[in-house]
Length: 354
Image 1 (cartoon, one colour):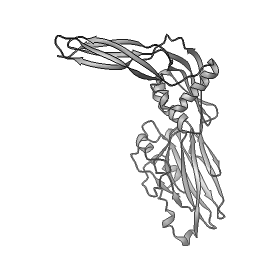
Image 2 (tube, rainbow, N blue to C red; image 1 turned 180 degrees about the vertical axis):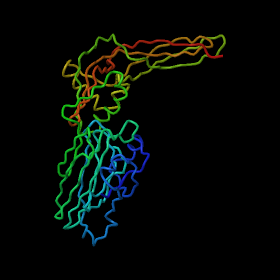
Image 3 (cartoon, rainbow, N blue to C red; image 1 turned 120 degrees about the vertical axis):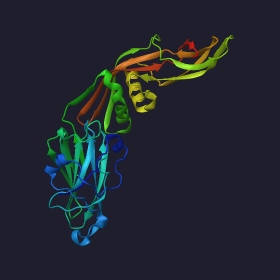
Image 4 (cartoon, rainbow, N blue to C red; image 1 turned 90 degrees about the vertical axis):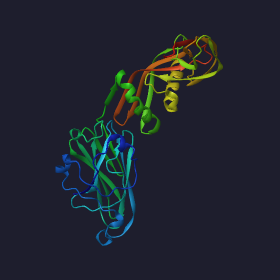
């Protein structure tokens, strides 16, 4: 086989920043000895612009193929090229070593050579959290086929037994988990996983996200975290200072993930629709409260005025479904400011150092 292989040392974080669908990297050095014994000798792919026309014929245009990751696993484009005995060139391809996160896709443009059948194979490998290849999870491949008349098709399979299932459907090829897969995040795992969930629900049209409330406390007896309104250092050795605040202050929704729902309007819309349907009242993400309060600051002390406002606390279960996989977040809490509620003030202080 002739394959291009990624350059060593690409981590998950840096590979994710490379971008999906960028220009092809047609040369490389084999760096993953694990599956090489399975796929055979690896060689660079020759780009269409450098291919001898006498060998393949006339290049007319290209055919596009998409690989979509609908699994829970980040997958690395480890290598691509022509299987043994096949010909083919690429007009463009993603960067070698790039990571396809759950919900993302990659695009390949394979050259159509008139009257010539061509085949390009792309191999994907699961990666560990640190971005290194995880050979224990297996390797999968897709063959992008263009016939001499310009028709397209795909085939797929596993080079090494894999946790990921593959499906080839003409020009759209997918990677999924087994049917019925559920990934449940415990409370101590949710904050770390929430950022990816928010991105999945916001950016990916391939995910279906929902929120099922289990309780709603709109009594006004639950208060938001403290927000500092004003502070001061009183350096006078003998005289009191004064802190005064008289202005409007906005308060926004907070949640147990540590990510304000206002950052993601799609999450806010999902929660609002569910609360409205179950409890017959609306749910807004930001409200303004009039802050009017004053307090003396003793000599040689730091002082601050903080405010808390009453919130509606909604608790429930959040789900994101991607392909065959359901991501489950149970016991998620959203605290939403109650419009027109009365805030409460606290004064915090400590002596100035030295």
